[in-house]
Length: 325
Image: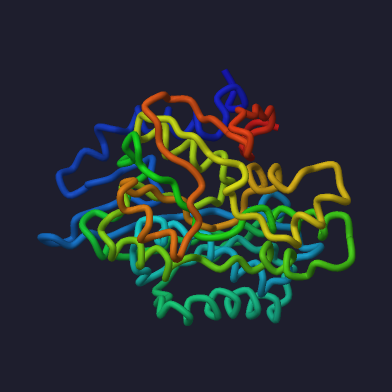
């Protein structure tokens, strides 16, 4: 059997099952399968640990990513995982594989991109590694943070009846990627959303401080994939109301000129780094002032998309999977 038969998330589940015993130390409170691992550092204090790898021509292309952009985004995707746990990022380690012909100015720009975002959240760069890459650029960053409420907000706590919320609009990053790939004019806002995503640290902390959220995840894999992760880990299903999904008027105009609807960009585009979270339904009003109510958790394990006429809509498309092409 090949990796392509399992897919990315099937592979992760296989690794998790085979290594469950190895991560069973009493200080390890959350292992493989969430946005971050959670380790108890001292009584009542929990560290959040996350790592992401970005590979040239898989996660970015130098045709439209500057070295500054590569550095910035490499850290952003990790900070988003900390945000999804309702945590504060503290430290990062940077490992970079670079072709030997890389200009030193470009290397400086790469680290400047990381430092630019790190300084916004007072993240300390404390080490890492550099090595020659025989092919393209490879970046792996590890971020260590701290949960501000208990073990952090996990994917696994959603309950039937909970309201589902999103922190912001979907689909614009995917549109930005299309603009870059097709060399289209206009909509630079979409391009910036793709090149320089902004992790929702403040929003995650607001949600964590409320102590009301039952689950949370970032939407880096797209709204559809992300809500499926919550439902899978929580052993529930959900109904998502298509007309409630936040989509900007600019994306609606952009998508009307192409064959893909704005909702498809929103559901399956990915690279958003918004947060999806659930709260008890009787606390819904508190979050509606700040975020977007988009659905509810159900006992059924099915994911349903409901239109404005209360009709279920089926989509054949799914989110991005690294090992299924």
